[in-house]
Length: 552
Image (tube, rainbow, N blue to C red; front, top):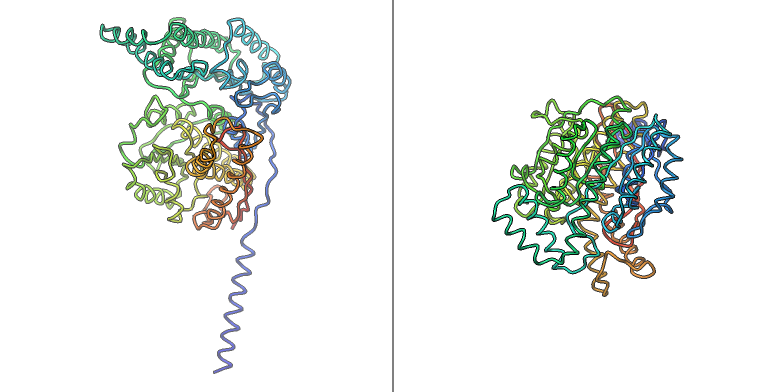
């Protein structure tokens, strides 16, 4: 009996050893790849923040495209504008070795997005810009120029400081648009009554912002018409349906129609920070041979969220989806079966908390059916409790099996980012001979979004801001670099490390997932990160992850 027991134990040990051996032989670490590229895009970004610069470059690694951005010393830094002369010289030099150029007018003319909201320019400044773009094209006719500009937002510039004046100007902006849409006596009376409560110089300065932008856009459209610009994209940031910005946009579009200007190379979309990524998505699809449309099945956490208008948006969720898919030459389909990927949009609120379980059930079904999933994880109040991510973590959903994730700031930012990441990744998988590299870089992008969009923006930022305010630092948008900035950065790193340890050891993080294009199963087994504040404020962070990925 003892001999029999001993034999059994030896046999079990042998089987276990063989099992371990075969498991070890069938699973290998993916070496951390070095980005390589045979294609080059030069990017003059909207500003120096990571969403406008690093996000595009990181997705460039997935696509095997080098994205070149200006030296930091030339770029804007929060309220300090970029060095326009140095940036123009840099662009004129760097573009000579590029295949395409993505150019922000706000950086090229004002020195960045924040500068565009407060800096007064003249018609001579606009004329110099137009001449520069003409010369840039003449010197580099082989390079396609993708130019984008952000329409001035409805909020008055910072130099109008009195709170009542700012609120009255915004109401005046709504009412003047309503009057021009419907010139009734009631609308006229309301508009004129609002005007009596605002200093005349404020009205004149506010109105001139949009008049000047109208003149600029008309001249850019002429460059588009003449072939200097390959594409002109006008994007609306933080808008409302009825507002002076939209009134002037309608006037601009009517002007093009009257002049017979073709709009084949013009796009008008909602968003700002993610616009360069959306343009880059189309460049990637053309390079990889996927210029034709993706078929996208769109699902929502609740039916009422289809027509919901989320904070800081002028259009509904579905209108945003339709607009962005059209911009990226993709189409929405009615059947999951015919879709190339699923775009799932969760708009969390107190009213939809009970829908989260159903959402995860549907996501699990799509995953089991082998459908790639891009998840947009929004929150009505920008809170962790309303997001889908924490329940996915709790329920061990294979998070690294998603092809894209976004849940930051506005609906247009998030939808644009998720669609862009998904389509860059799927296009690159189809075209790539080094599919492990494509998978690795997309996993980095995915985890960057998890850590920033959920862990930081819906959780840690409140901890940091509350701690600052308790210590008497009321203004979290103007940190002292020698004092509270360092303290805030220490809090950021400590809080992220604590969350990262929990995330790193969760089943949701470590669960394997299958990639059909490479006929392989992958899993992420470890993650590390570095993070800091790119500007002296707590609104956004710059982070980067390194992963350990195994392939079975």
